[in-house]
Amino acid sequence: MDGTKREDIRPGQHVSIVLKHDQATGALTEGIVERILTSSAHHPHGIKVKLSSGQVGRVKEIHD
Image (cartoon, rainbow, N blue to C red; front, side, top):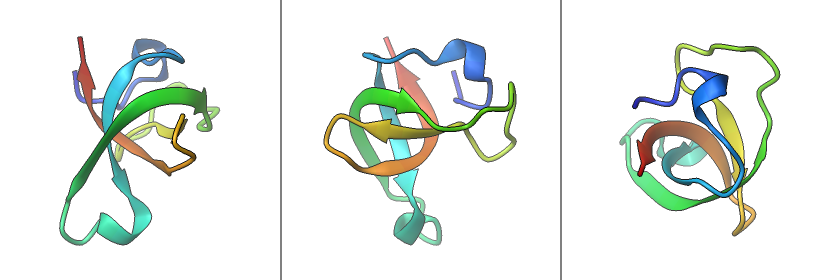
């Protein structure tokens, strides 16, 4: 899954996100979702989340 639909993401899930300063390179950061920050049902660049580490970024991959 690509992380553009809010309904696919839940707190506690293992995901890969792109941090704001990594958007140009597309470097991914893995972590566990602590909180979903995007209120809309869909976002073309990925749903914004806060990881348990405190990092904030847009979800690019959802891991099972």
